[in-house]
Image 1 (tube, rainbow, N blue to C red):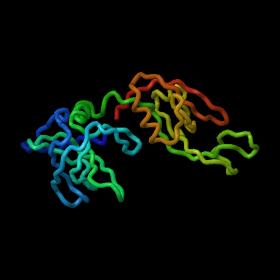
Image 2 (image 1 turned 180 degrees about the vertical axis):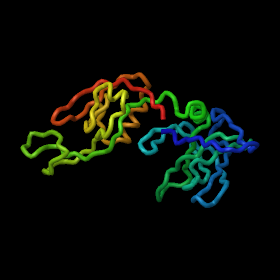
Image 3 (image 1 turned 60 degrees about the vertical axis):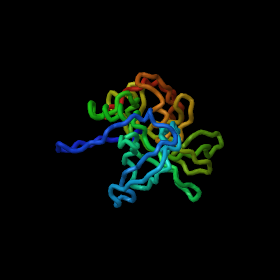
Image 4 (image 1 turned 90 degrees about the vertical axis):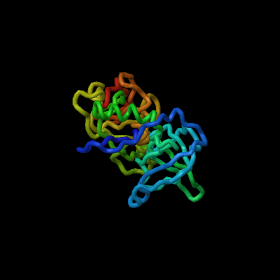
Length: 238
């Protein structure tokens, strides 16, 4: 969801980066990316500029607001620092666009966005305010239509029909929002507040748009019936 983690080590007196304010960054500012490209070229430095701000980028089905840079970013750079000319850490490199016709499009998490997440991880061990259903899930391929032509979903028959991907509930956490709402193991989640669900990553991304305490309607396929369940979202604490 955030692509951030905090690692604690038993050491003292180590030099630390000075945290800068990404809100002070403007397009055209010179920046330096430091990382380990290809996983072997330790402490490599590449130079570039800030090419754009507040870029809405989808990374593994999760929408993130990132800074864009043309500093060279390669596999192994993710997690490395993006620094301004004062040596202040203004972002954390985490993604790049790639393709035959793509060059010089890298992205970094703005430091102003990263700070509260890192402080939550240090103070609480998790990021506060994240909505949580309380289920384990997996993608499942269903066939739409059935052998007698009446339509409907059937994950267990092998008749001619069109495949559609939905989300199957594999486990329900005790005392979770899902259990309170009546979600059951083997329910097939087909919609969230009327939005068709086509995979677990999509469902997770949609949930992150809500707040803890929000009430949502989850539509599930249970046997041959569609059931609408009202779920008041809890808080993820892991």
